[in-house]
Figure 1 (spheres, rainbow, N blue to C red):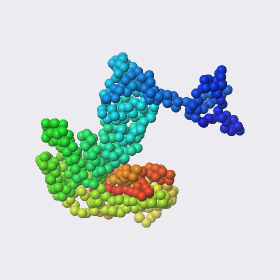
Figure 2 (tube, rainbow, N blue to C red):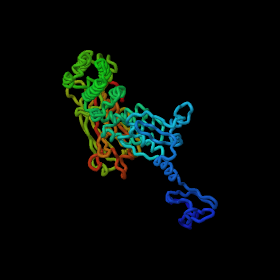
Figure 3 (cartoon, rainbow, N blue to C red):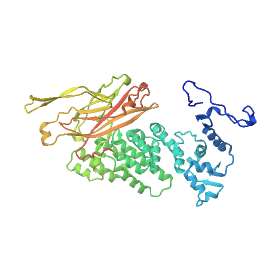
Figure 4 (cartoon, one colour):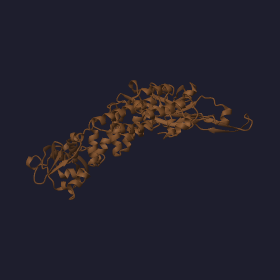
Length: 530
């Protein structure tokens, strides 16, 4: 029992007794029902009035109408179920039911028995959905969230929509563990729930190898598949993984057609294959990987198309004349020359900050590694050295002096004090150790074009995954040899001392782990990030 009592020195006093005119509270026949007295919320009072909130009792009474099937005035037929209901409750909870049951333009307005056509999945949860309209209570889980949301969307029950979408947004990684993230992505995309759709899409792109090998992968529709395949921020071990994902998706489509009795399977399969293969970046595969594709059923079934693309890729690796210009003739040809975020050893290295809670403030952890200079095989094994500095607990710039010099480099003309500065940010700095040739720099514009990806490993309920990715295309030169990724993660969330962030993983969730991918860009590569 809570109440705000006036008077400072009287302390907390009991609420006044409720008097019933003409009798006393001890008489059962004449007393106010106070069986759930503890659920009352006492508000402001005066000499003549008392306000209280007994709304929970009202909800209980409404729920009783559903539980006891009392005074129902309409019968909902859903599949083999017949569910008594009340028009008043249905109309108050759903705009769709209100129009259906109140408008004279609908035959249901005068019917006592209404047949609702629902999918088998929605039929299975319809009674749970109906009970929510009476009680406001529901248990949403991985098994029922999609049909519950389908019903909430169909009947425009906005509060239930919020419940279901909030459940999805908080559990995308766990949906992947249960082989459902593709289905969630397809459903939210088709229904226009952009926020959750983007969360699912990012998870699929950042954990592509795992998701594309799941039993949920074939549930992706063609438009969604091609949208994912067109992305340059796809995280994968290599382009062969992309090819294999298409192979398995097409195999599922063929099986569907066979089971459905489709007569023109070859025609449909050719169309689907050509659409998908446009997005495979064959030049990003090594010559040996391209040779292995000769054994693929797709190559056998679509020999001409596959051989043309594979030959163009081989010409790129051999540095054949006009090889690049021929690749650019293909639709989205610049993307064929654009690497994704490949995690194979020649482009990627990892850094782990263990015992993260004990890491001093402003401390830096560094990683030095080398990446191949080109994606083309003719460049051999030439490499570029890189340095990654990670500042997970902020950046501190100490006070210093900026010195200005004139023509002879030794002549100091001015000096300016630069005050200290602290940045509350999670920063990753990427710099090159490459020594740029001054003459080439002046004559040929010597530079290093690369795609950089910082992949943050996370863990939710014991499930490890790539939880966040930050990507940038950057051109390094003699005068520009460092790029900073500020606000890589939420500083406050990562450094919360009370709740361990899902961006921490490992034993006791005390490690911050990142992978850094640096893939070389051709001068004709697409600079589009997604």
